[in-house]
Amino acid sequence: MSKKLPRGVLFSGNITIDFNHLKRKLKAINMAYGEEAARMRDYTLPYGSGTVTFPLDETQVLAELHGNRVEALDDIRAALRRSLERPIGIEPLRERVKPGDKVALVVSDMSRFWMRQDLVVPHLVDYLGDACGVPDGDITIVVANGTHLGGDERELRTLVTDAVFERVRVVNHDCTADDLVALGVTPHGTPVSINRAAAEADLVLCLGACTHHVMAGFGGGRKSILPGISSLETIRHNHAFALDPHALRTNPLIGNAVLAGNPLHEDMCEAAGLVPNLFVVNLVMNAEMRLAAIFSGHYLASWERACEEVNRIYRVPVPRRADVIIASCGGYPKDMSLYQGTKSIDNVETGLKPGGTLILAIEAREGGGPAEYFDWVKDLCTGTIEQRLRNDFTIPGYIFFLNCEQAQRYRIFLYSSVDPASVAPMGIRAYSDMDALLRDAAIGGKETYIIPNASTVIPYVAEKE
Image 1 (cartoon, rainbow, N blue to C red):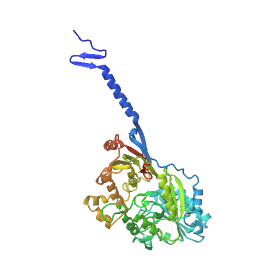
Image 2 (image 1 turned 135 degrees about the vertical axis):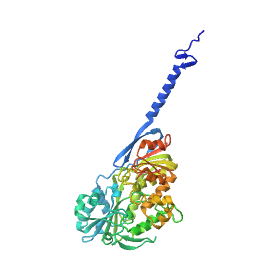
Image 3 (image 1 turned 90 degrees about the vertical axis):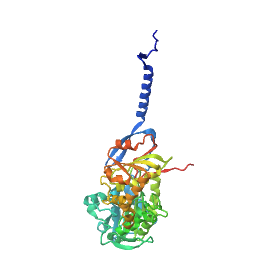
Image 4 (image 1 turned 30 degrees about the horizontal axis):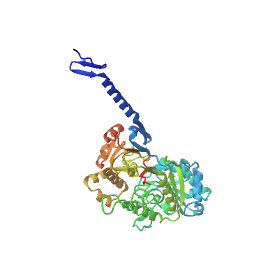
């Protein structure tokens, strides 16, 4: 007698097929797939002059960090004049300069054009003429290139605007020039020589932007003098403080936001103190990289106030360190090279677990940056990097060394135009395909922070109340 099978069940030979069970399994699979698809979200990061977009399970994203909201200045000219007439720590600018005085206006180079000094320089030059009686012919704009090569006329026009370039003499600082002027030696033993136009001026007026800095604690302020317009010897002697004198590693006394006891920062302040009649204008950008505050006055007091504002805007509390950080430097010019772009690593590592994964978008259209950046691969592979750094310290060499240190602490993946073979000896993996990068990074299910502008945002674990 044949056995009657339940409805939806088919018997064929020795095989019994339960279609009801299959339907339930298929429904569960479809639901699971649908839920997984629903969890996927596209995230977009600045990259070069454009963007890069990638999908990620949003349930693994702890937060997308953007910095603290601060409105941009709605009237830059008025804000600048207020800061010049009510400066911090010294008398107003109009009382420090008079008709007949020679003024050296020191501005940053293209690597720091994110500060958009072109929106400030015309107002500053106008103020020197209108309020201080200094004609255009008595002003020299000196571009603080540090060890960087100076740009061509087109770049200079971009930095100061066409209108100002036509009115005022603009010169590139050359750290190897043979007419630099010696000012003295700092208590840290650094011989200080600076640009002649600045050394011979009656007033040195520095315009810079304050932000966190991997070696000096914060950028801006005194950095307009050292390294900005200093000699190569001065810069090398100062920046050598970035190395621990007793071991091949970064000096533990330096770092982001570290000022107390930081020998590199203290030496910079001492060098700036050798420049007579120095007046500094400090710009602070908000998290959207728009000008949010201006603090002018004494080279140290006004800059320290700017540092406080930078911390207020850029430091973002997080509940805990994440397994993964996916970040961008903020696009061009922040990611113009590895030399510039990898400075973001030091900003974000306070939010990353030891051994965690960092995925960083750096277009690096200029490759490593300074020609010698990748030259240090030879010393890395031959084991001579310590000897060369100590005997012939250079900033690109130190940044290269720092990047190698960071690659030992974290798994670093670059979405970049650089040749993967060029960074492989450093322990860094580079990709031009974001899908391939995410597949190899294997970050599924791991707690992640997304940081669209890692050149400014500093995550920190908030203390429990």
